[in-house]
Image (tube, rainbow, N blue to C red; front, top):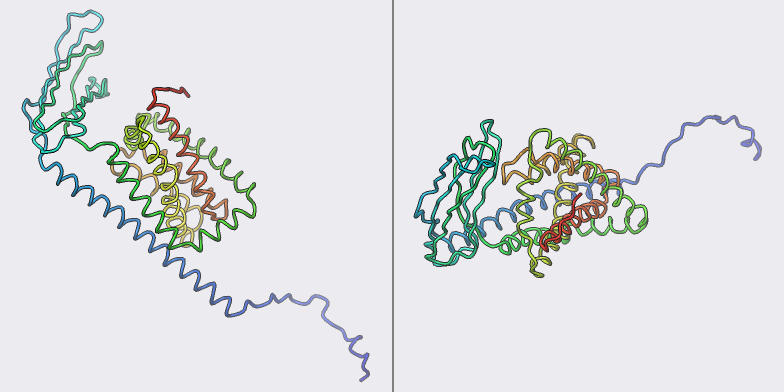
Length: 362
């Protein structure tokens, strides 16, 4: 055999391509990283639940120690519905009630509420009476008369009680999301670092996804609000009303609310609902299931404390869009945090304007 004979051998013209095998060490590293991320996700979810419960427990203990006594009923709430002598408003109501603060500390806010109902059960007028800074031994009196052009058929049972200041609840909620965010940044710093590097590689594209993602959220909320209105729901949820009630012209309050709503809430919620919950269902059942289930959980968690489950619809839609954006961004947490920030920041601006008496019609 000559040294040139190999040149004339008949080789297979269509050889089967054999991809290079991944080194076993790389496969092992991938498995270890995968397992590590699952452990990290479980740890963050556990911490989120424990911190939320712990902060709520501390809040409850503080409240009971500071205000051991309920409001003392001096005059039980009563309502008298009668005919009016005013032709334009032939129906009259008169509400009386009286309560005393028997605690050693002043009560920031005492309240009494009821709803006036029509013959079909629709709410004619939701009534709320409040007294701020009720000192120890002081009396909270209600003596209210009003006239209506629609018959008052019945009313809901009176509810009364008292509450802490808005600043108290801001500090409680801020503490929870602040602690969670800092712990998450420390526990999963590799994920945050990797996602941030990926974000910086294509900043224009990722910022475009943030802006586009916000408009997706806007459209989803518009559709969801229309559905809620068709089902007879109110324009805003109890969660939104609670947040709006925290706003005032106090600069400290506005700074703390900005940190709570626009900085630490987006970080905490995106890590939990997207990275952890979306990630779990994505691995187990696929992307569509992950978007639906994580969105549903996100929505329910925003209304479960108040029980107005119809108002979960906008939050479910929002959570679903966040899930889609997370998938669209190749699971870059900074993209969904950015969308969440813009959404909350715009709401924050509206609430600030309302606190200063500026109304913007949309």
